[in-house]
Length: 273
Image 1 (tube, rainbow, N blue to C red):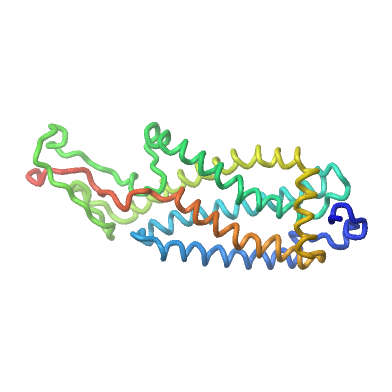
Image 2 (tube, rainbow, N blue to C red; image 1 turned 45 degrees about the vertical axis):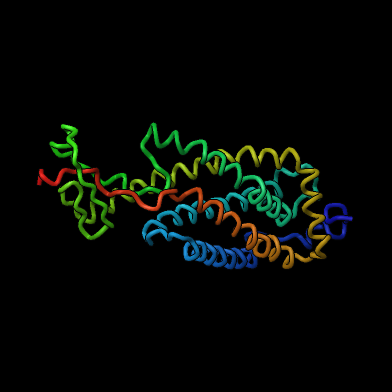
C-alpha cells in the first residue's frame, strides 16, 4: 500500500511543505552541495579553463539551476494544490521528487539535444558561439587584411588590463563590457531552451499523474520514509545531491566552448605597424 492509497498517510499530516522552514533550510544545503560540485568539476578538468571563462560558464549554470529549482517548487505547489486529479495527490514532496527525477532522466538530455541542434544555427546565423566570450572585442582590419596579402603573423595573447587587438589598444572596461553582453545573450538562450523543454515535460507529468504520483509515492514507502521531515530531506537534499551533480557534469559540457582557447586577434601584418 502506497502513501497515495493509505488514508492514514494521506490525511495531510505527513505531507511536506517545500516553502516551510525545513524546506528552505534544505534548499540552502543542496545549494552548497551544487556549488562544491561545480568547483570540483572545474578543478578536475584538463586542460582547465581560465578562471574568468569558467566563472562566466558556471554563472549561466547557476542561474539556470536556480530557475529550475524555482520552476520545480512552483510546479509542485500548483500540482499539489490546484491541478491534482485525485484529492490524495497533495504531497508536495512526491511532486517535487517527480520533477527532480524527470530533470535527471529526461529534461537534461532534452536540453542537451536542443543545445546540439541550436549551436551551429546560432554560430552561423547570429555569430553566437556558446562558451566563447571574446567575440565582442572589436577588430579593426588593417590595410593588408583588406588587400588579402600573404605572410601574415598571428598574435595569440591572454587577456590583460589593456587589450592590444590588431594594433588597436582596448582598455579593460571596453573588453569586459563585451564579455558581459555576450554572456547575457548566451544566458537568455539557455533559459529559453530550458523553458521550451520544461513546458511539454510538465504537460506530460500532468497527463500521466495518476501513474507517476503512485510510483513516486511508493518510493517513499519502499524507503520507509513517512514523516514530513524524512521525505523533505530525501526529496530536496539526498536525491538531488546525486541527480544535480550528474546534471552539473552534463550541463557544464553544454555551456563551455569545445576549443581550449582561440586567438584574441585576427591575423595582422607586422609591416603595417
